[in-house]
Amino acid sequence: MLALLLLGHSLLHFGLGWALGLSGDEAHYALYAAHPDLSYYDHPPLVGWIQWPLVALNAPDGLLRLIPQALWVVTGLLVFACGRRLQEVFAPAAGAADAAGLWAVGAFSLAPVLHVLGIGLLPDTLLMTLTAATLWQTLRMLDGAQVQRLRAWLLLGALLGLAGLSKYTAIFVALPVLACLLAAHGWRLLLRPAPWIALLLAVGLVLPVFVWNAQHGWISFTYQLHHGAGSQWQGSQVVLFMLAQLLMYPLLAWGALGLRRARMSGGGVRLRSPQGGLLGFFALPFGVLMYLSGGGSGLPHWTAPAWVALAPFAGVGLAALWSSGRRRLIWVLGSVQVLSCLALYGLMLTAGPTWLRSSGAQPETINPLADFYGWDTAGRKAQQLARQHQLSHLAVQNWTLASRLAWYARPLPVHVLDPAFDQFSLWSGDLPVGADALLMDWSQMAYKLPVGEGRFQRCTPLDTLAIERAGRPVARFSFYRCSHWGGHPAPKRWDEP
Image (cartoon, rainbow, N blue to C red):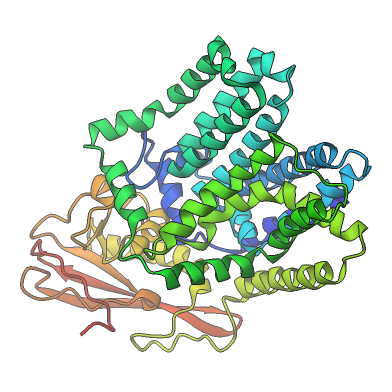
């Protein structure tokens, strides 16, 4: 059953990975690999480093996506192992360790957001796997024999260091590790050399991030602090965040509640300490992100590593609920999530529901699934037009457009005509004053032409490219030759006054 669950979803991931173009975020992190460095403005470097060999070989997008697909499978195996082990600890007489592991993987594999991370490589994909691996290693090291072994500490230090190279929120993984190990073995643990060796290994692995930031005025840390803080805090935003999370992960949430219910009703489940403290792998990052959502800061996939950490506990809870006869809600939630996953796959393959069409008018109805289509063709078109008109600069008015254009039109430099600082400020710099450029606009994020005082003197239309999927237009690319850049960007969307 475990093999069927993981293999079935992996085949779907593989097919979608070849059928879809890279999203804006995927292209951005693939560009990390095309520009190897110690770190980057918006994230640590591992998401780029892990892709570097394939990017250096000019591998197609489908091969790049084998990385997140493999990470998703590894995460599933770790979730199974953790669920199995927790069942043995919490309910040793139940004899259902395999069932708990399978329920954990089932709940994990039916969460649509986790499938997105299993198709496209984001920092959260890496952190998802490393969170599960760190949870498993911490669970093992709660045993008195394991904690005596230097190899176990070295593995733990390596996992924490790699997590730190994946995303800054990895600090929320490190803190529960410390709390659980101290709860299990006492403060005397810190008198041994092995924990400090593990700490040095973790810090050594993360050191490139600090070196890069020291060289660049600590801009990445400053950006993350401002980005995480968001705007004015509102309780309604937190409510919306919680509702969205429950809608995305209902089976995992019900499994966690089932674990608590089985414990309180005398169902044989006992949340033994310190294993119960491993719930901090979920509670700490989820609580922080929930609070930050009040400032309007947060994306649906940011909580994915936390839910992965909860999955083994949910597996124990679902197994307990199922064995006690409380099956109806599990069937309902499981069926809803199966339909959600199938709907997600279908919408991705068809570029959204049929009523979302590109009219060519500005602005047009936003279709988030149009992101996956046409950018490779647009990149080739930009290269062709740049050669024809002897233009050495490409330009866009938003960094998300820059990521996809820069990936598919590489090695041509792409300049972002926006006064805000971003990664392209380091890669390409500002468009030189007086320069001509090939400007690209995309109908799903349409901007007014940057013509006027301090901007281009004029922009002449060169070509358009209509993208169709399932027999209907989904987006349109427009290309302009723009002359004599003035050096004072002021981008305006079509729907702005």
